[in-house]
Image 1 (cartoon, rainbow, N blue to C red):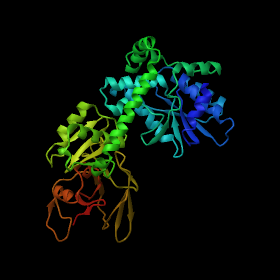
Image 2: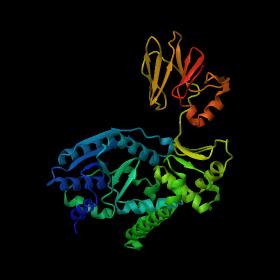
Image 3: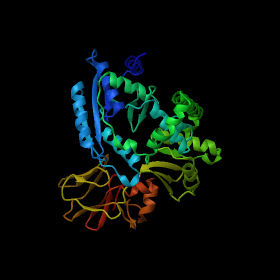
Image 4: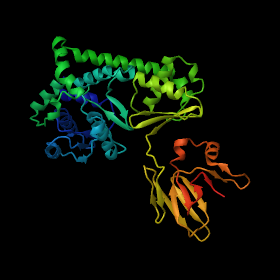
Length: 424
């Protein structure tokens, strides 16, 4: 079967009619774009867009944009070009990938599926990189034709095709593609595998990539079976996706503990920790004494312990020194906390933030917004002054959330934690 016919068979696996094609301009994504364009010729209802991410890492990056624009004009496919900044201090490969998917998230529409040009050789590389990291079945399962990542549906229709087949198709169709010079740099782990190791294995064993693909599929299916067998227990611990309750957790065997935690990370589509990281997480956070409020950093995310539960959160900014004057409305709050609104009437000032409100008497004093306070407060007219830490505990607000709730001050006097309590 020729590549186009096999590609159309892949498309029959999904009912999607709207695709956003990840287009780098290289061989793989150029072939994918051409295949989609040919498939659309007799299907006017089929909707295609492409997106190109300008990472700014190559001196040729601007010319790559022009190439992709020309390519999309040729196929009459709208193109989105997004310019991103890559944090080189945290590893270029991982940071570029993160920046790329964040950019795609900003542009993908609700009815669109992201189509990527990952092929059979990519699958082998991903499997070996997971093997090198010491990944379990979850990681060794590598990529699937259809999956979800960062809340986006992803379709990889070329996953069962070797790169050589894509190149033959591109040459037959007289397609032009760019060459990324960084692909020759064996400093990068994937390039080292691609350029130095895997060619020798393929030379020795002709069908090596197909064998790796079967192994990856076996790992994926075994992981699916484990998840199915543990599903009932998992749901007892995880009733809210970002929360994991620890009741009876210490009674389980170590393999069962790590399997349940991996299911939790997978559900939230977070970076999968290594075996050593999981062991450290269990030792330092899961088995910590209640009241210790420990936390474990994993990339830009944090696992936090509060009372008898684990919580997944971003790595929040420290707002302890933030003080904002409420002169205008709305007031933009830091660290993606949204906006604080103030509606003034003769009888009251009404503050609104997210789904919370606070109603206070009018004042001529300066209104200031802070995020930390220590000391005693009177938050109920019939109760004595109490330490604010005890108030937060009584309201069941975890420590990290307490430092992200806007506190309203009239002058230097705390008057309200918006949506949680007023101070009498």
